[in-house]
Image (cartoon, rainbow, N blue to C red; front, top):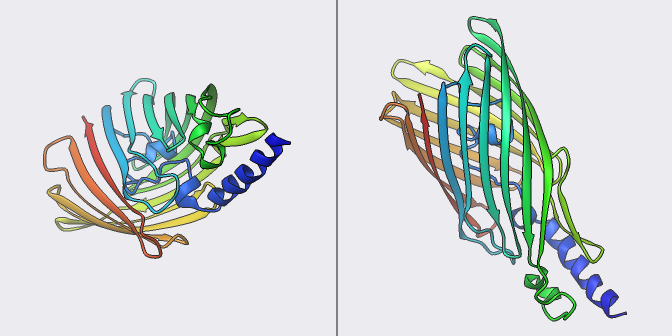
Length: 289
């Protein structure tokens, strides 16, 4: 009877958090989605022979009960010209108040050249996720002696797939993540679920003298459907300015960066809600040659 008395309010609490994307969404919501497109779609790997990127997203203020701590994502890729493919390795650290996840992954993307300005790419990525859960940090469980001090570590495999099409200065990609949907359960309850997610990206770069105008659209299906519309303006490689509107969560994202140093990309971004007080920051470093 004691277990039932505890489980009912906990399930109610978890169901409430699941209705709030800013609280329950496990997948990182990177503002710089074009720079980290490979994270969402294993076929959208860097065209450089060798590339490396490091990015971090973090909460500046969060009105939710379970605040997200700084996330760190890094990837390395190496293109093999004779194989027409790219081998990649990546790592993600994704912490929350009552659990954290460490992801390590290896992937491969193969390019099929259609013409001089058109290519089709298929990609796959196999991951291992280590989820560390501390149920006693959930408020409704803190007073329950059966959970107090109990910690759970679970390691699970996962698989991502993606396809991309590049044409002239444009890119279209579709990816699916978490085909195995890694889940952590305890005492008959689900605490962490990496739901199967879908991503569609469309982007095009328009050269106008020394200026490049870059409109893009990013559609995500994680817990709910969200739509990101972005416009970015770059002057040569000196600086890039961009802004994104996210619907239906009504968030505004802005970013600024530079590629003035050959092979090096540096960006910072800011994310604010129109209808809430949640503010996030992001930094990005990339290198390719």
